[in-house]
Length: 261
Length: 261
DNA sequence: CCTTGACCTCGTACACCGTACAAGGAGTCG
DNA sequence: CGACTCCTTGTACGGTGTACGAGGTCAAGG
Image (cartoon, rainbow over all chains, first blue to last red; front, side, top):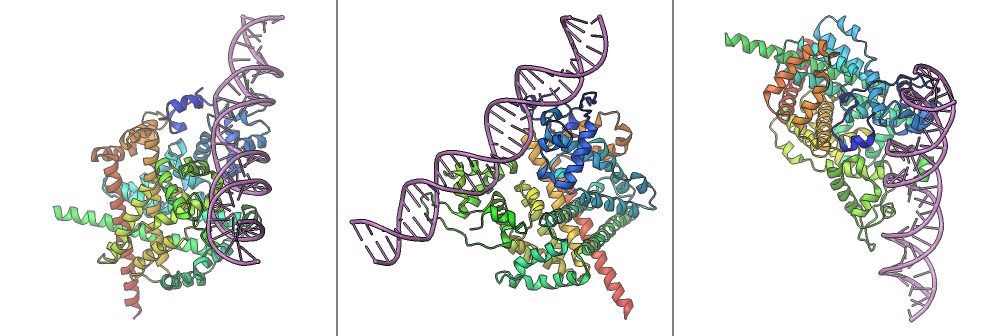
């Protein structure tokens, strides 16, 4: 087993997935097991958030001491990485194959990705911090890459299009999920929390020259309904922009090819 | 002064900016000062990263004990929030006004934003976690909103377009900056680190059916030059997609208005 | 000049964290 | 019975953020 001390000497090991180890299955008295540990982590992460998860609490939840976990896992980071990959496994990849065209496939993927980030608010901070190269993450990445490839875009333009869509979803899902998490931690609804946050600069005379322009946007939003409804609407509008943009790039390449002839 | 204990009773206080307090200026023997604290934090955050910053180390850097800092700041989180807003102040807003059209303005803003995230690798994790409602952050948000407003898009479509562009930049900058940070921590160049990360599943027979499709993308990338060059290229391509998409939405709205008549 | 009070800094202490290390129990096999 | 492997535990170390109370410095007022 690779001890953390060895890892300190070998800082290159930056992901669990870069150094495959046999999973130790739980024949022990506590009936522990890497899957059980990961499942419990996800439950606690969903309920309490990333900052509140500690090895001691996780162990207690599993009826065991903190150090027992280290038989199955090298570090706490490993647990997070396993939990992340497990969540990537929630993607319904079959639904994506059922989509009619690449536009639909991208929309379905984007919505699933966003829903996942909102459902598990600890995912975006973690996904930003670790390499996402577990088997389930790779499977999702592959589906995304396929959808982009189906646009017919040239190879050198594909990564840009892929980034535009999925880094957007990541960014959007991050803001949305963290906003929801903070609202919940403050014991408020998202609507209450929104009013509270805006109030900060709405009432501040120092900002008022700047807000004037933003005011109408804020008002338009407020008139449109709840914060949740606005998250949905803006997300859809952004997807419209992105797909229209890719369509343009595809058309431009077709145009260029025609002139070439 | 609001003590953390009071904050515990009033969890609604979720940002320094939601509860203005006079800044205590440093007439004390140590010559301390909120600005000096924030400047030192930024320096240390840039050098050592978010995880390595501790109140004790920051205090030592300033020739003082940890508890002295608490005279100027309620919690460590406050320091991060102040540091973030100070970094938003690095934006060169004048350069944006100089841009010719909204397309240019969006490009300049996006590039500045991305550069900022890469320059300060601790910004994206922090920006995701806290509300960004300090004066400098608001000023930047205002400029972004103006640029989007200049597209001529209807009010209800503007937030979607704004999200598409700037959540993309946030997502992209996050991945890029965290990748760079991890590479640096592993003592590798980005190119070495990239090869290392890809190796994980490139050589794994379990993944090989899936990689086949991704292989050509990876090869295309590899043939194009260094990882840094690819970051730049893909970012520009993504911006192309986004701006083309907004242009389409603008044109569609104009079309709709014409038919209306 | 002396005292008061505001301002600032510090030492100590608490609860908690991740995890190294070594001891020990339980079960299986010779 | 002993030995060996697998799993769990107790203890301990060096860190963290920060509460609390004591003290030191200095300007203003009597």
